[in-house]
Length: 277
Ligand SMILES: Nc1ncnc2c1ncn2[C@@H]1O[C@H](COP(=O)(O)OP(=O)(O)OP(=O)(O)O)[C@@H](O)[C@H]1O
Image 1 (cartoon, rainbow, N blue to C red):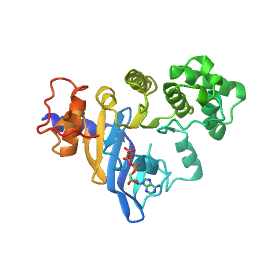
Image 2 (tube, helix red, strand yellow; image 1 turned 135 degrees about the vertical axis):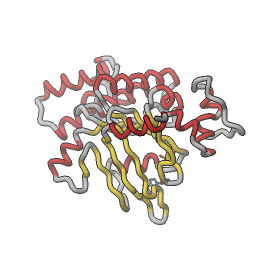
Image 3 (tube, protein in one colour; image 1 turned 90 degrees about the vertical axis):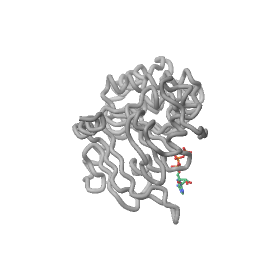
């Protein structure tokens, strides 16, 4: 059996936790996603990439039902929100965590209060237990306990990302969506954040859907990569699949000069080389 066949057999055995089928999304006459398909498997870190403006955020927002779609279906953790009843929708909401691009913490609330927001919305817990849980999440993301009573304006960029991650983990989700989690962090902070995500995946059994432009993240923590292009998922698979995929943007992205500075040295550069942003 070839490697490709073995991989495809293994993929079939994996449990799909997010299934996007023939999804079309547009704004007026601007069709951004056209009959797009994507599967995300339990326990993986999927890196979602694509040129600027191709619709990565639009897809994530559509999956999270923050944007309407024109057609297609989306099933998350076995539930199709469109056909689910109120109780099933609520149960699904508690199993999802989201970290938006700029952290999106409420500036008038402390870190602890931000983390407790989802708990207040979905759970009926005494304050003492919510405090205990908030401190647990704060520790989980590598923040010091005294961060709990700080306001977002008192935190560094890296601390804001961690606090936002703690809030995303507030309800012990199965699937977390991260929109450019390392953007704005210095390389060391970004590498630490990547390691944190990988560790949380391993210890909590999370599935991670990560929109990113960060080549380091793609090379160091992502199990699979999906590339958005031409309003669809152009290619999905391992890094090796990306290197082998015959498309100018994909070749330039994964084998360009910037990629070569972080990738394993055994990967040859694309010829001719064109840099992408
Ligand atoms: N609310 C909206 N109304 C109209 N057009 C929108 C809206 N949101 C996104 N778009 C358009 O959809 C397209 C895709 O945008 P999106 O933000 O998803 O790109 P992206 O791939 O996430 O880009 P980047 O990597 O720069 O963040 C763009 O043409 C954008 O102008």
